[in-house]
Image (cartoon, rainbow, N blue to C red; front, side):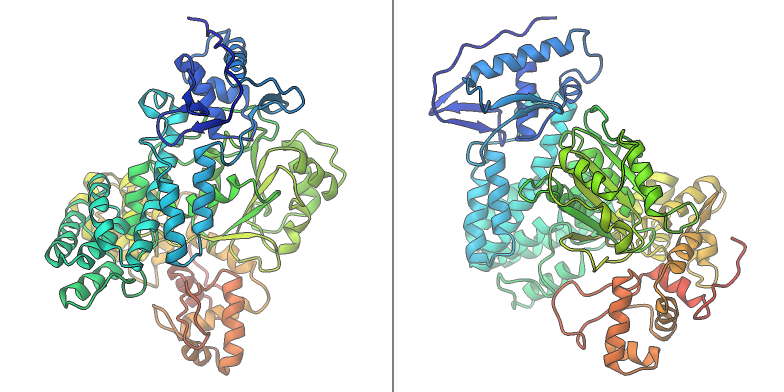
Length: 633
């Protein structure tokens, strides 16, 4: 195996690092020679986790994904030495590239690395009006010089995964820029650029909608209508689905000659906001489908992360939000909360994020449940004892000692299935290097500051894809209508879809149509959602038992007294038998408990339309407003 060769010492000057295109380093205006491929893999890996430690094991996995040589550690030392010489890294007090207990750290300022500059500009554009956001996003996009990392570095699976993540962020930024420009009347400038992207990402609905709006705003109405027709036919042929309601409404407006370039009825779809768009974006980027790209192995200071789901499906936008929040080093000790009803896929999403962040949290990642096997709340002493064992700190004296340890180590801790604020408050960081990712059915409104990410139901396309992965594509294609009925009867719950698929995989003789008929019978649907020792009813029952006093009875009344779709405040008041002022308090308490979903935008309580997740509604209607019915399961 060839040995790495050291590069000559470069003359001092300003450095500029590039990842958003071929890997490059410039000193002033001169490109530096970056050496052999393996040395460039080391540099790219360090830049991808700039200002954070990258373990020797992670570098080894990136360079030699299959069989590292016995001299791997020594070779990495030589590559690092060559990079130090190349970067003229002779500041002994504050070296740019240094070794720490957690690995190697490459220190880079925000204006020295195009990736850091891109992230800062995109963050600055968030929440701004179109006039302010458009130039920031354009400036971010202008940093890109082609496919990230180039073809040669993507031979490394770890760097290929990083490149896919970067491409997804670039695409989302472009969509945001296009929508901002359309609001400002820049349709002609947007239309042509979107054409190429739509050809490369044909199933991404947000792109299609923006292209349709741009063509219409440029006075090319027939072409705009053709965009919709082509997309509708593609969806029907590939997925057996129709475009989202928002896009269909935009099409009707264009057809009637009423639409400008402003937002579609109900708002333009956000990145991946519809089931179709989410399925398309994750399928194209690999972010949520297929075998888990868990990243290179790292030395485990903290241990105990479950395996990633090989068929993880959907929730691409939420995954992106979690990754961005946990990678943001500007807020020390940040806490992220994933909330949603039982079976929404919160734990799977948290574990997925933890696997993808292996390079970021080089001292380990672990998951600890805050409930016991029966669904009861674990005492703090038991939780701390498990944390101590997982982190090699068996002598943890209490929460304060844990927080001190967490502040000093770059670890990611998933505190799973949090029952209430007081169960987790003593375990949260007060600053430092560690990060905590919470999952909970409720909103945990008493915790602050916490970044909250709601986990919505799967879109129809995502749910069908998950089902097909379990029962077989051929079986789903043979009766797509029945497959659609099954996933809709599951209410978009990943757990329910997965249980349906596992059961049908065993009951090969049962036609999908027959199983769909069983699920669409409200009296027996929950009894059908059982496979082996996995039961949707039992999962819902545990959540019901853990509700605050009075919430279960109120949820039962609300489920029995409202229809199957959204309901307003007056309907809630009638179902609860109280006035609207009291109904607001009850509904908002149920939102906090994770039993009711709230509107996406800001509206008054009287104008809001609330909704109860389908399976929770079925369970609540069977409780008799208090005690669940006895069943065979």
